[in-house]
Amino acid sequence: MSNAPCQRIAQFAVTVREYDEAIAFYVDVLGFSLVEDTDLGGGKRWVRVQPPGSSGAGILLARAVGQEQLASVGNQTGGRVFIFLETDNFVRDYDRLVARGVTFVRPPTEEPFGTVAVFEDLYGNKFDLIERRASAHDAAGA
Image (cartoon, rainbow, N blue to C red; front, side, top):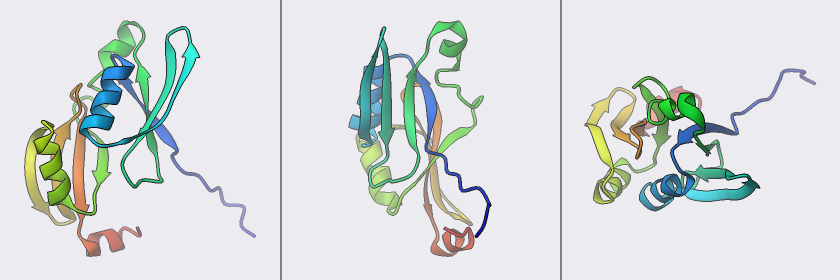
């Protein structure tokens, strides 16, 4: 029997200006599922979204409070790509997102690991939309 730890990332927080505008973007535009929206009182909510078909990590939409948190909205990682969204069909999802008005800041390119394009959420956080090549995905152990 192994005593090695078994861990996984269950969710991570993205600071947002307002819950409802963030839900509208992530659910209605990106097509994510609204997993939970619980009123915690005092204007706070526990809001979680997840990509379609995902059983992995979700995003906690955390309303920014105070100047320091408001300054992080749209700049979670200092301008670098923040979230890597893998898809099983790049063309389908890219076309769907473009049709829904998503801003792509880098067009699709073919890379050694697969097809990738960079888009922004409603605040400017950057996402990679990626369809991995089978060999690159297999080599990564996924």
